[in-house]
Each structure stands twice: as C-alpha cells, then as structure tokens.
Image (cartoon, rainbow over all chains, first blue to last red):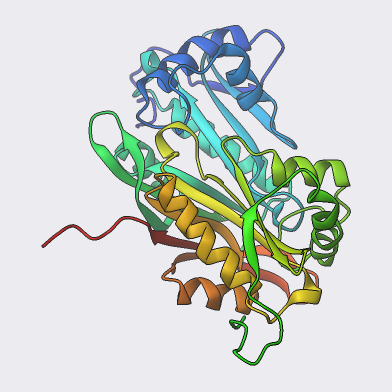
Length: 179
Length: 179
C-alpha cells in the first residue's frame, strides 16, 4: 500500500471513530473480504449479525473508520489481545474496501490505530494470525516497526495456496528507556 | 510434573469426558488457580458463571476431567484455535488441582488430550499464551514434543514477577511424510 501521491486529485482519507450510521457502509466490503477467505480465519458465509458482533462488539474495543469524500472505505478495530493480566497488549483488525486499494487507506488506519493504542495506555500491539501470503499487509506492518515473532506453520487453509503460515507480529508502543 | 511412581499406593488417574456433575468439583480449584493470577490471563475475581462458560462453552470444544479415586482433580478443554480456515489447529487449556500436584495428573491429561485432538482430525496443537515463569508447564510441553515458536515479551503482568513473556508453543499432530 502506498500513501496517496501529491498529484492525487482527492484529499487525504479522514480517520475517525465509528458512528451509528457507518455499519451499513462497512458490511458490504467486510462481507466481500471475509467471503474471499484469503486473509481472515472467519467463516466465509458469516452472517451480517455475526460480523457486526465480531467487529463492533469486542470487550474493551474501539472501532475507527476511514472516510474518503464522505464514503467509508476502511475500518480498524482495537481491543485487548488478552484480558486481565494480558490487557496491556493490544490486538487490532483492519479492513480496506477493495475498491479503495492503493490509496494509502490501510496505512492511514494503521498509523492512527497505533496512536490511539498508545494514548489508551497499551504497551505493545500484537497480531496473532497475519496470513503469510498477505504480502501487502505484512509489508505495511514491517514498515511501521512490527517484527514477525514467529510463523505458525500450515495454520491457515488458503483457498488458492492451501496450507500456509500465520505470522505472530509484534510492536512495542513504549518509548525506549532513557540511556 | 512427574508420573506416579511404582511405589505410589494409589492407582493411575483416570481421564474421561466431563459429565454433568463434574463442574461442582472443577470450580473450586479453577477458582483458586485463576485467583492466584500466575498462569491464566483471566480476571482473578472471575465469577462462577463466567468461568463455566469459558471452560465448558467454547464453540467446537471438548472437555476432559482427571479422576483420582472418584475425585475430579484436573481438567482439560480442547477447541479450535481459530475458526474456519484455522480450525485444523487445536488449542487447549489445562488445570490441575493444587492439592493433586506432583502425581502426573497434568501429564496424563496432556497425553490424552493430544490423542483426542489427533483422533478429531486436528493437524497441530498451538498454545498462544504460556506464561514463561510457569516452568512446570513449559517443561511438560517440551517433553511432549512442543517447541516454543516465540515468546511475546512483557505480555503477562505476573503478580509476583511483574511483566513476563508469554510463549507461543506448537506441536504438529500429523505423522511425518513417508520418505
């Protein structure tokens, strides 16, 4: 994914908290991404009700949307990766409408989500299951300071590639200790 | 944990599926283990209702108990680590009553759970959050063929040790391909 270029005739995407009317615009591209089955461990025929609970209903969660000229073209959800003794590490999910690919929407969502996580007091962000064939996502996270802690072998049944690995990725959100 | 020695006057622990009346014996030691806060990312004041849903209610889950002379002294729960495209990898949780420590209950539960997972068609077992200071558990898993794929740094707030790592551990359940 690339940041929108200076010559792009559209302005930068706006990132804000999800509002009451946004779900109707999120659902169509969430449905399409889940139905493709290439990036999320979710039933490809997930119902709208289940998807809404999944995306909007996580305990301690916060949801952002990316808005491009009034249209919701992406979303991120941030929540504790574990409860209680593990709640200081965040997990997050990201979705960008395929029709908006290549305009930096994912990067803008990612940068803002990292800021929000830091402001909320999380000390790190962890992803448990980044599909290793999702090259654009992996490259984005690496460019934003994440490392691949491990790749769980053959953990994801990809509809085209068969069994592929799932990356566990991690990024501290704390400043380095003063030297 | 060690296997019961030949001189032990008691017989080996029996492992079977959980029955209707078992929860009442599971809850007291589950409560104590969770309240100690040293091995699970669960609220230390978890209610009985929440604990029961957590342990017995996972989608696609199966629960075993370890029985020693008619008394439930341990339990294991097995479930898919991820849904859909990730459902062929199992996750599991284990609890042994502190009063039964050192008699091989954890090992007996672990061995049987691995068998059950293999019989159910899982291709691997993964743990997402083994507290690195839980030396007995880590040693048990390594002795049963698990490897530490990664240690997520400072991911667990231990009541005595402060921030410690969480191991991601993994073991294939498939036979090696014929040479």
